[in-house]
Structure formats: C-alpha cells, structure tokens
Image (tube, rainbow, N blue to C red; front, top):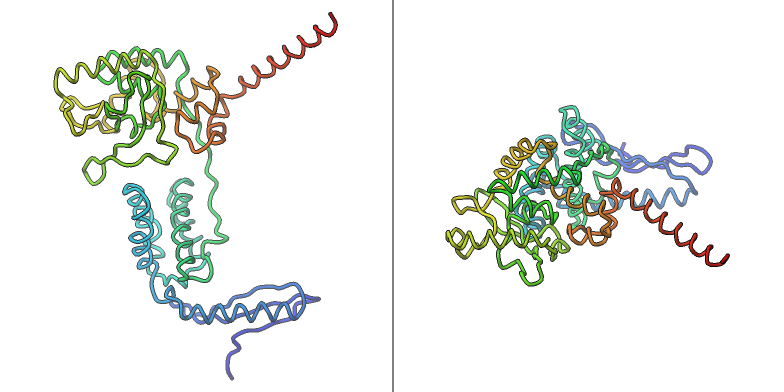
Length: 379
C-alpha cells in the first residue's frame, strides 16, 4: 500500500491535524513528518496541506538539499560577508562559526537543519561554561547566514526560528569619578604615555580611533580633531580601516590644555624626526612604530596602580569621558555626537545611571519658574 504523503485528521470541532511526510532522516533513517494543528474549516485545512506539499516538493529541488552547512558557510563568508564588512569582522564571524557551529552542525545537509539541532548546539555551549554573550553572538552570526540562504532560495524554512537563547546579564559600567580622573591624569602626564591617555579621557574616542590619529587630522585654529579612520593590526600587519559606523566619522572639540599638550608633542616629534611621512601618526612607540592597544593597556594598568585609583579597562576611559561630561550637565545629544554613537537614544540608555541628577536639576528649574510666575501674579 502506498504511503500517504499528506493527511488531514479531525481533532475536534473546526480543529484539524495536518501531517506531511518529509522522508527519512539522513543519519537516523527515521521517518520525518511535519505536523501542524489548524483551526478553521475543512477548506482551510486542505489549503494548508496543499501549500505544504508544494513547498516540500519544491524543497527536493533546492540546492540547499544538496550541500552541507560547512559548504554553504564557506560560500556565504566569501561572497556575502567579505565584500561588505571589515576584515576583522569577517575573521570574527569565521572564528565563531569554526569554534561553535561547524563541529556540531557542519556536516548536516543545509536543508535538513532543524531548530532542535541548533538549540542542542547552544545548550552544549552553555554546558561548556561559555557566556550568554558568546551564545548570543554566535546565534546572531548563524541567523545572518541563514537569512541569506533564504534570500538565495536555498531554504524554504528558517531553522533558527523559535530557538531560545540565554539572556545576557547587563554588566556594571565602570568609570572614573571627577576626583579619580584628576588623580589619574596627574600620574599619567608624568609618564611618556600621558598625552595619548589624556586624549582618550577627554575626547571619549575608541582606542582604535585615537591610536590612528594623524597630525593632519588636527585643526589647530578651530581646536578640533577629526575622527576619520581606525588603526588595527590584522594578520600581523598594521592597517587603516574605516570607522565603526558612518556616524563615527566626526569632529571633536579639544580642551585648550590638550591642544597645548599636542603642540608640545608635535614639536618634540619634529625635533627628533620620529614621525616621518607617510604614516604621520600622532602617537608612536619610542621606536617610531604604531602603538598596540594591548601594549598601551599594560602601561595604563601600571599608571592606575601608581595613582592609587580603581583598576579599569583601557576602554573605560571612553565611558569615563561620557560619564563626566553628562555629570557636568553637557547635553546628551552633544555627548552622543562626540562619542560617535548611532543615536542619542543609545547614549541615554547606556548612561542612564548618570541622568537622575539632570532630572533633579530640571525639576528645580521648573519649580523656580512656576514660583516666580506666582509671585508676579500676586504682587
């Protein structure tokens, strides 16, 4: 007797179970079925069954039914990722997939992937002690790859739909207080790394941005610096890359004492001829090479210990710049532009812990205005 390829089974009043035979699993050889309960008329159930049978039959001719996930990911990285993202980002995607996805799912036929397979992969990552952030980032990369497969019509269904990922605990943001910043700057400026750390703390630039500054980026008359590139080390070589996003290309107003500090640094550099073209970098090692962020971070920690202030990450100088500016009453929009954030809303959300005092000040001003108005009416 021929096997039924599709069934409609009554399960109650206007309730139907649809079963579609999908063939046998390529590993276990067990029969696989698509099961779905439909609420409505018999005509609704029949229409759903007809549609699913058509999708199943089309799926037999999909290229995704002929290649493994490994083969597809190779093609996706080469043709869809590499041309549109920075080299470091592409390497990050490749590394995530190589460590966490390919070992468990790589040999699976692309069209045979199921949400449960992906969920099992994530659960194994959690059992290995990997953080929720790592699982979520891996999921984001795989989801992007699968979405492209759907657009290329290699798949009919999305195997990452319905997969549950762990919640990521929001880490506590750490930054200097005003007093700690003053103490740190005093200690830093007594070392050769004082100028670069002072620029980091007062501008809020990312390490890759201030380490990639060139002298021609500084407008001495306007006392501004333009962020137009980032410096990165990829495959053991230095390279200049685009900024993180388009809004990251921005001018930043410099403090007057920072301008003086940079002027002195330029005069010293010119006298010693440490910074010849074509690099023309503002900050260099004593041997004239670009500064590695890890190298700077090591000296940064030593200065923290010397100053007796809390140990922060080098990147936390960016958070300190934003926190101190907001605490001083600088508009969140201005701070957002200085940091090169995607939006002011992102800045407000990131530094919400600094803003309550701003609400207190606003309430006090409104109260003063209302009180003054009442006095005028009664006088």
